[in-house]
Image (cartoon, rainbow, N blue to C red):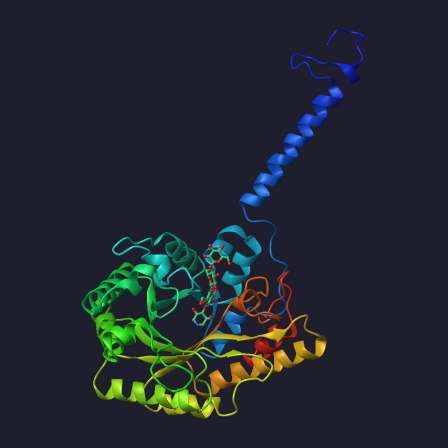
Length: 362
Ligand code: G3I
């Protein structure tokens, strides 16, 4: 600088005056800080009260899980931290489904599901595989196949996916939602083309693909004793009697303010008496939104009942279908409904969170 020059207007080699240079420098620093902040996925999670749910569950010999979304784990640091801290198992909510993993025949995209598995490994979590044979979220090409090709493609899909995750996934929803609400086998593409034998075939193929995995049939809306669960019971009883390798039944337990049926425990007990493991696989409690404090308390009571029901049958694991209202299929797909999970959209605990913690014995 020339002696005596005004430092506030010194332009130096950049040609910018000092105040401008300072402003550009500050903006640069802010951009770097913002880039770093977003690269790590935003802010840290606010601590949740009490001991982590996975720890209280572990004391009861229970696994406690949540559905997770790969994109949220990737982009949202607080979401990632809470998933890791609070849950001992994860179920990919969509990333392991047929449409995601084999969008074209024989063309597999394991990337997003691999990322979930990798994060689960880092968090010392088990992964529940969801799902191999389901009528929904199928790629278009599957629905176009004739019987012979569909049977073959289904076997190939099961082998490829279970083979890929042989080391990482110990439990699979092999067949998902095969019974319809009227108590008949669902008229899915598998049922229409292959007949009821597709279910046994899927389990046998799964056993051939992975000798150690626990093989589950996962059903929705079969919590109470009714036409649907009676049909499900008859189905799995026959599968067992025929020596088909089925290890467990998952009750999804999607609920609303009506709560779950009073005979939920009795229903699960009869399945257990067939020699099957029982798991609650997709629990949530949808509310009309906006939910008032009374409804949030009622929701907490229903969540408590779900935990108690699971404990009453010594269930293998309890999974919630997401843990934040910001990422829940209820608000995304059911008009006027939402607020279905343990934490609100800002990842703050709702009454249901403490209710679950207490019901787990924490
Ligand atoms: O992938 C598209 C994305 O490209 C697009 O931008 C976005 C816009 O809405 O939609 C995305 O697809 C969504 C898909 O999830 C993947 O995220 C669909 O709209 C949405 O309908 C779909 O919903 C999933 C639903 O299964 C499909 O039936 C839910 O997230 C998922 O929670 C739900 O999970 C099922 C279980 O697998 C089985 N039991 C019932 C349970 C609830 O339906």
